[in-house]
Image 1 (cartoon, helix red, strand yellow):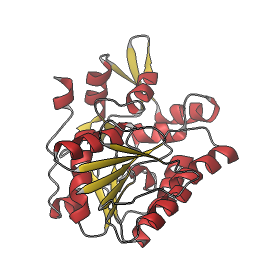
Image 2 (cartoon, helix red, strand yellow):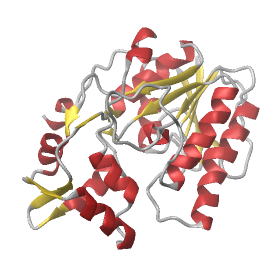
Image 3 (cartoon, one colour):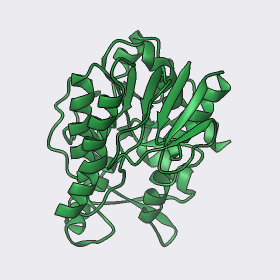
Length: 281
């Protein structure tokens, strides 16, 4: 099919575009910069209606991402892309299947007593990213899209997660808040495969992650290549109130122990074949 991929110059979008092309699809990359393969149509999600002429389906990954300090201007900038840009995309895509890539950051912050299902409350987000992704996905769900909720996407080409994790390294140790917890992570390859399969899924929201949860301390110790040490979670949350490089959201991601329930996606045929080991060999 002729597949439109928005945000194809970014980490996740590029992975989707490459996999789609390798599977024989005709790929059209939409965004402010060209994607790695296929045709290119310029689109500024914050300002313009996208040109989807000839597309059979759309995978929407264009987004304002990150963990900025709070502020009115930050909130407005994120809303312009993640909410208003979504509205423009859905308007242009009428009649076409849409896969809208969201984030597990839309879920109400934990800690969590068990695996998080898609019916977990979607409110109380601590930052502009989570709030505007939640607002954007409400529009997508109302329009009948398939919404994917990955958590902590990692892999080749990552420009966000690993740099943030490296901030915890000081003096040859990774200083992590609170006790060790189980947590879901999502290989970018697993996400890309889900994006290509999802146009055939029933409308609604789906958690997307690797097949099994990971232990936080083991994973970060391997990825960062240094021993792990702990600091009290309360101290870390206090530091987040005054530190320019640490936020409450970042602390939550390391302490809440979010494990995603994948049963709904598995019923649609989702089989996550990659794990962190495939990227560390």
